[in-house]
Picture 1 (cartoon, helix red, strand yellow):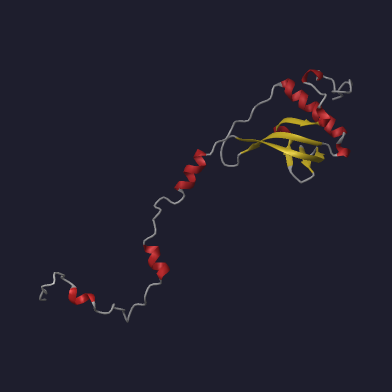
Picture 2 (cartoon, helix red, strand yellow; picture 1 turned 90 degrees about the vertical axis):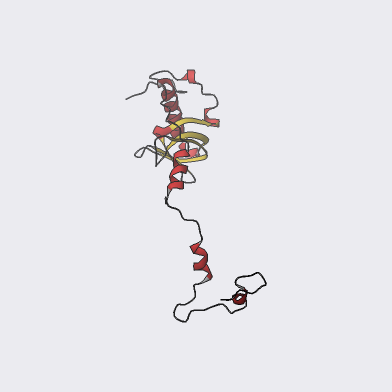
Length: 163
């Protein structure tokens, strides 16, 4: 091949038409683009890092006096369940993937209390496990104080609890 004096080695090829194979079909633009897309050697690695970084909190074990107070609130709720009392319940929701969980607060009217499943069910269908309740607040409990709960006595009633 003789080099022209213009300075470009491939100047004689630049103006030729683009070669199209007769044996192999042309690759679609999408498949051509896929050749140059980034390769993820560790599939799921990013998801694992995000899951590890996600924060959870530990379940707080309540003191006995706090448990008795909540027990009194639950009894009062059961007595007024026909009026569908409105309240805020803060409870622990265990994490399905790792140790710990998170505390959530739900606001609404209570539909029923399921003694068999040990759940409080709101009118929107949300079920809260009684064993995970941290606090209950509402108009029904405004006058109730922790000091009102005495072992063996039901709050507001002054009656002995019959086992």
